[in-house]
Image (cartoon, rainbow, N blue to C red; front, side, top):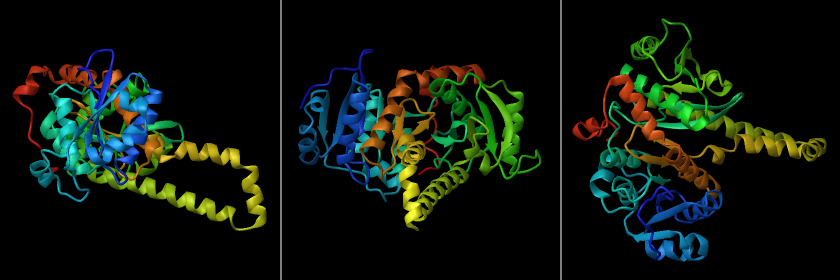
Amino acid sequence: MSNVPAKTPESTIIALDAMGGDRAPKIVIEGAVLARERYPEIKFIFFGDEAVVAPLLDKHPVLRACSELRHTPDAIDSNLKPSLALRQGRKSSMRLAINAVAEGEASSVVSAGNTGALMAMAKFVLKTLPGIDRPAIATMLPTQTGETVMLDLGANIECDAENLVQFALMGAIFCRTVLGRTEPTIGLLNIGTEELKGHDEVRIAASILRERPIPGRLLGFVEGNDITAGTVDVVVTDGFSGNIALKAIEGTAHLMSHFLKQAFKSSLLAKGGYLLSRGALANLKNRVDPRRYNGAMFLGLQGVCVKSHGGTDGEGFANAIGVAHDLVARGFNARIAEELARQYGITAAAAAANPGPVGDIL
């Protein structure tokens, strides 16, 4: 094994759960190779079964030279309940990768493993930022106008109004920090745009956001079709509705891809049309490629944790690593802490005194 030096301002060390994902550790290694080409300053600590991971790592000398492999035979099963994973997975590749961030050995952690287990472990080990009651899962989605940030996508099934307000703040700061939008627009997902529509929690959250100074501009309520229309920069919702909306969008994208393939196979003339439009179709495929948007952020933790889709390939996992790299490089957590201190008057010292419970994800 090579030795990785302690984290310095000149290097970004990322902890990788080598055993998480449908095709791990192969896609984890492939993703790390691609990410290293894009970000030459990155170094890695791989956590996983040495007998399986080492032979794959040895095939890539450049990656091997900037990586450390820490052996653990334990891995979190994709079907394991978060509460059991938290109790039984203390020596798992996922838990040890998260521990590396908490102990300052790595700047961030990336895993394609069990989402519920990753959230439970990350919240338990890393704790939440002061002023944040619950972390939220956020991702970027392609829209007609560019990209939209959406949260929460499944971490919190039930949310009160203050949770939604906190999600709005974190989403807006993400837009500022990562997407470079100085005054991001915010919308609360609802069943209509009228002020009297929706649950009490959503309407109360809107009222709070209208009165409180926020790092963005509240546009009010948005509906499901506004997500892909790009009506707002940040779409805020509870994890139940957010996860359903995300899966519906993904399913629709797969359906349209299926219909398009079937249409081009329907006749010789259609096949000729495909040949003439290959360039445009390639651009379309790249624009909506889910691998391009892979890497959901766990916002609100005292450490950067990124969840990759479990069924992705090396390209998708490399993009998840890129998300982690960008969040660290742009000081995302520090900016959230600053904004929360301004909003609530809570200092960083409060985090240690009141880390918060593990929450309802267990």
